[in-house]
Amino acid sequence: MIRLAIQKSGRLSEDSLKLIRECGISFISTTSKLKTEATNFPLEILFLRDDDIPGYVADGVADIGIVGQNVLVEEGLQQLSVKNLGFSKCRLSLAVSKGAEYHDVTTLQGKSIATSYPNLLQEFLTSKGVEADIHTISGSVEIAPSIGLADAVCDIVSSGSTLISNGLREVETVFKSEAVLIANQNLDQEKNRLLQQLLFRMEAVQKAQKSKYVVLNAPNSAIPQIKPLLPGIKSPTIIPLAEEGWSSLHSVVNEDDFWDIIQKLKEAGAEGILVVPIEKMIG
Ligand SMILES: Nc1ncnc2c1ncn2[C@@H]1O[C@H](COP(=O)(O)OP(=O)(O)OP(=O)(O)O)[C@@H](O)[C@H]1O
Ligand SMILES: O=P(O)(O)OC[C@H]1O[C@H](OP(=O)(O)OP(=O)(O)O)[C@H](O)[C@@H]1O
Ligand SMILES: [Mg+2]
Image (cartoon, rainbow, N blue to C red):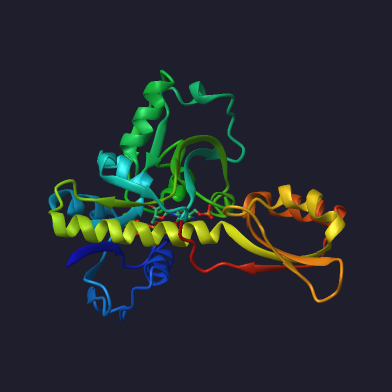
């Protein structure tokens, strides 16, 4: 049995649970129960406050966990990181009052800054040669300038709407973050085997999410032009259509190049292009 710690409730919770389910692992989760066992994989899930997750994994109370890089690095435990998970993307940023004068980071020299991330902030300020007075508070950081607690804040930003609602202006990015899978560094052989199985499944899920299955029809004369646009996993499948002189091509396309490729396929004479999501992708 391997023990996984995830956030009980917050910005990491939903996608963490979704990822485990996409790995084909079933479990019953209720908001009141802080521990659950998977029904079809030797996995126990603990639901915790996110700040506690790196420490629990470092101490071996949990074997693996999902947490934001911001929390992991703030706690000085980045060595536990095993895999970037691509969700809960956000940044730790410095912000000042909307109307405040700000030229560059040296504007903050001697100023007071409220944050829940004193270590990440201190490291950033030191790298810029700036000395400031850091006020560590555990939440509602964005309120600090308006109540006279600090001149600036350093907090998590995603859409930026929390900053705007609180009359603040983002001025510097201190750290970029996403969710990561972390693991205890002394897992026994059996737990390590289970971790490798989970990683294998997570990679299949991630690859599939980045890819689309494309099916299209084309006149045979257009195939030499279309084929190099669809390298797929190895090369496209080409099947003759019932209509003489036409074929159907099947392939996998990376999401990043997707629209560009579709445009080129149309120009090359492709018709009836179908794009289908892929659930898992192995190899
Ligand atoms: N607005 C956001 N968009 C995307 N990711 C975010 C956002 N805010 C925070 N995160 C990421 O999700 C993590 C958890 O954020 P959340 O706000 O739920 O934490 P919290 O309030 O400290 O939760 P807890 O009650 O578990 O201590 C953060 O450490 C960060 O990595
Ligand atoms: O840039 P935005 O999209 O507005 O997101 C940023 C906000 O999101 C997080 O808080 P959350 O809403 O999770 O609440 P919390 O303060 O209770 O953690 C973070 O602490 C910011 O306050
Ligand atoms: Mg927290």
